[in-house]
Each structure stands twice: as C-alpha cells, then as structure tokens.
Length: 184
Image (tube, rainbow, N blue to C red; front, side):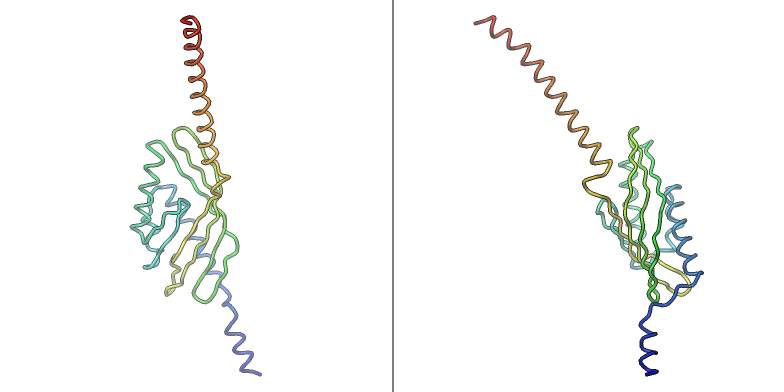
C-alpha cells in the first residue's frame, strides 16, 4: 500500500514555488519592455538553446537570431512612424516537474500609416527550468484569421476601390453614350 501511495505522489505535478511563479512574471515584464524599447537583448538570456516559436503571422522563428529576423520584418511592415505595443495577460500556469506551460491573451496595438489596429491574440509558452533559471523553449501566438481589424481594414479598402472603379467606369460610359447617339 505504501508503494502505491509513493507512486501516486510521484505522478502528481510538483507544486510551483512562489519563486518560480515570480521568475515567470519577471519574464513577462522583460518581454513587454523588449517590445516597447525595440531591443530584444534583455530577452536573450531567457531563451533556451533550442528555443522556437510561431508568431501571429505564422512565421516560425528559431533562436534569438530568428526573433531578430522576425522583428526586422515587423519593423519594415510598420514603417518609419509605425508603432507596436503589447500587454500580456496570463492565465494560470501549469507546472509539471521542470516544465511550465503558460497561456493567456496579449492585447496588441499597431499603428501604421496613421491607422491604428487594436487586437487580441491568444498565446501559449513553454518554459523549462535549467538550474535555477526558467528558459523559454517554445512560444506560439494566434489571431482570429477572419474577424480581426487588419482583415476588416483590407475589406473596407477593397470596397472603396471597387466603388471608385465603378464610379469612374460609370463616368466614362456616361460620357461616351451621348456621343454615340449623336453620331447615329
């Protein structure tokens, strides 16, 4: 009977210490500050050697260099005066041995070309405790591919383009029709 209880206890997830929880909270703050400052160097020591991620654009990144390459792509999209802000809202984290599985929402704001886009993404992060430090192993973020402000903006632009093209076509046809009748 004792052996069964010991085996059962070994199968239970280890309770996370308050230190572990605080270390992950600090990691969230480091990420938010890195985005705000557009400087990811403070994040580098918190990435595992085998770090990978899938960003909201479905781009996969590998390692710190992958993050820098991805951010360069974001900077090009934003343009000279564009901005990007993020606030992380985590849910409860699951601790399983030396792994932490976190999930939550990110409130994000992008400004580009004078247009502001506010949206919420869902994210998951897996961290592994290496020695006394938690290192990010994998991150993943998703945005609703249909109902988001960027798609809505593109749809509005498409409607305006179609409307303007139809109006111009109407003007051209309207100008040509009277001439044909006059010639007949």
